[in-house]
Length: 141
Image 1 (cartoon, rainbow, N blue to C red):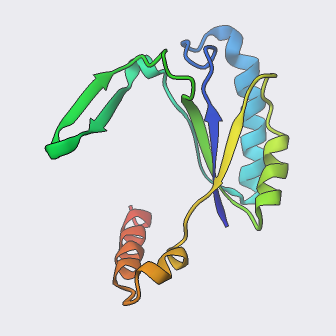
Image 2: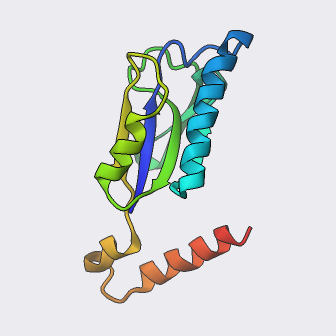
């Protein structure tokens, strides 16, 4: 089972990294290395502050609106993520309980859809076959 673990952003996560962040980064690096050695990490990344980002909104009639960051008005920002492969949701939660975060950090854990989840909506298998080809192409890069 694959799980997306989303690190919710904070005011602290929105600032630029500084020398005093070295210890926290080293602790996170050790935690990530442990998960890599266990074979559960598929991807893991931290994100730059929203001041370097943009939001794209899709409106009626094909209208697209781009809004440049920062998004300080938003209460639910994403600071980073892991994509993990574990045997169960409980195993994923147990790994994340060990993450070296400061008090106040919140993680959201969501299971990633697998091709089989779409069987009822794809009776011919055409959409699932297309997704399989896409995943294989991505993996070959």
